[in-house]
Length: 76
Length: 76
Length: 152
Length: 152
Image (cartoon, rainbow over all chains, first blue to last red; front, side):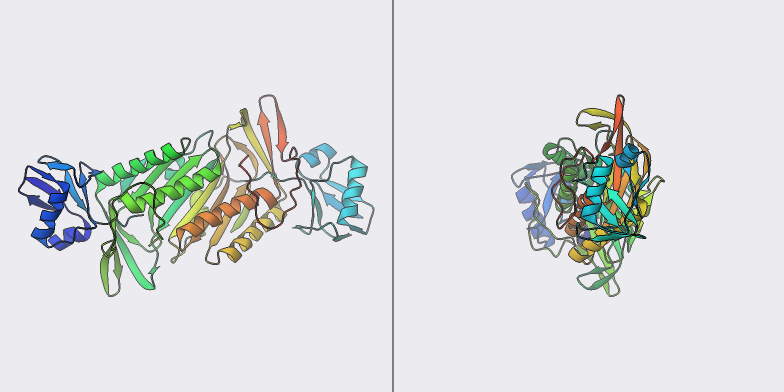
């Protein structure tokens, strides 16, 4: 199981801070595809953070990692 | 008589805040030349301020004007 | 030097962190909440952050600046929570021995903040509210130099 | 908005003067006394001004900025008297609706201050003191655009 943190409009839209995917290892690319399908999300513009750093599509997410979906940012 | 205010190293070198020239009307150019001669100053890099604005060499200084010699500035 | 906070930001405090005996120039950027955005009247803003990662990404921006301007010292504080018009959302302070570097490095920092720091802004208007960022139609995956992006 | 003072300068106070509801960006320049100049160790500085004219020339710089960046709001405070290392000599605050203008207008202001504002700096070292500016071998009569001048 991998827990994925959600923020901002994503958190509001899903109605929860965190979603869970039923994998112990998955590539960032596959994770995004699965979340897009399961939650009907447009994830093209999303980044994935693993342990608080941006991850590439080829990176592997493992159970125990701190994972977050990062929609386009608007700070500053 | 026209009083000319002096600042910074010029004030220290002349030992006074103000010098007086014996004219009622004089061009800025002639004023600078006279001061250069009388006080052995290198006035090439000096500006003259009349009533707190920079004056051109052709401008006329009159008795009653507020006049100052402005050596190269170094504020900021 | 890199802080995410819910409290009001003191410009003096952020500035003091970067003053050095051999740096004669400090440049600050202070981002305040603007009332009008594209002609629409904002009543208030809410900023949400992913705090641990936002702090880490601010630090990364500091590291990027030190690579490009080795003598620069950088401090950044970003506020989260609800802000009113004219409240300070972010303060960036950069000191350098020569002033041109301080301007350049500071501008680099704000461009990068808008690209990579996980903070989101929700604008509240009289007739509704919206998270800013989700209407952007482009991928913002960060790489290399900042693009020229206008302030929102 | 344009002040020559013998008192310490508050960055917050100068900044507050330019914050506007429709300007989201403020850029500050803070000039501090630097210990090393060209490898020589400065102990302290003394600034002397022709105060009335200096104030007028700061105002003129503000006018020049408003011609070039009509939405900019500018405040400048310059300190005179004796300053120690790291003391603040000048604070320039510029607010604009868009941040790039605030950086550009602020940098314009400091360049112009170094050209036209009648303030002089005396550096004190262990082995002597000197008025800065009098060793320059060029005419500084002001006209048109600022030249590219490195910070002293």
